Amino acid sequence: MKKYIIGIVVLFSILIFWPLFIQRADEQSIIVRMGKYNRTVSEPGISWKFPVIETRIEFTKRLVEYDSPPVSVVTKDKKTLIFDTVAYITITDPYKFYIKFKSISGVQQWLDDIVYAAVRTQAGKFLFDDLIYADRQTIINESVKYTNKQANEYGIDVKTIQFKRTMLPKDNESAVYSSMIADRNQVAAQLRAEGEAKYVEIMSKADMEYTAKTSTARKKAEEIKGEADKRAQYLISQTTSVAPDLYRFMKTMDFYKKVIPGTPIILKPSGGILDYLKGVQQ
Image (cartoon, rainbow, N blue to C red; front, side, top):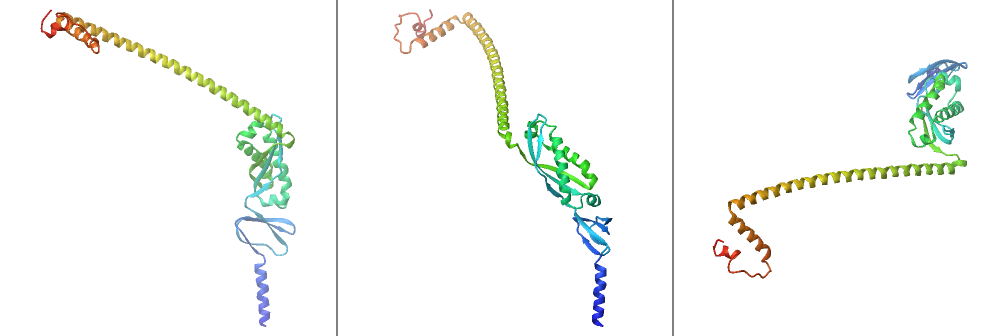
């Protein structure tokens, strides 16, 4: 009897818990009944399904990385580049995704084709130098838009497409590198020439400004000197008219100051400095 009760309890527990399943926060599911889609389970927690006749198929909500094969692109100026790309996708509608692809592995070939077409179409609108040196975010944005026009119909959202590497085809790698070096050298030479021309222009302007300022300064100095000489002549004329003896004495002293040091001179008994030393007025 006791074993019978235990068996009933076990069977009852199986019947209760067998239909239940726990869905994580990073999961979403569809329930298939007898091979046909029945419903979608999007929320995390405990959910249920009918045993035997219903099957649960899980899909991730997380970002899925898809490493696509390298894409060969012909640029607007007819040069070839190879982009090694990686796409990041999420499953937004498990039902649409399941109907079209069944599983993540089933979407790979489709993504190969759509990413390849998107990158080729968008990158082909740009020049070679733009793809090598310029910001590629525009190409990425346009490629994502192009891809999502089709991907969204099948429950996929392409978040971004990144370029891991940009390569040149082996057969024309040397020629392209040589062309790139020649172009860079030409640009460098042009920049150097522009720099030298700018240097000459700046130096010429500086010389002109220096000459103009020097000329103005000299002119101003001459004017000041002329005013000083004019003032000196006026003072001398005033001194001569008011005190001629004093003026004559100062001129005599100035003369001897310049001549006497180191020079033997002979003075007459009268005249010159001796008259002033004797207090005799000529």
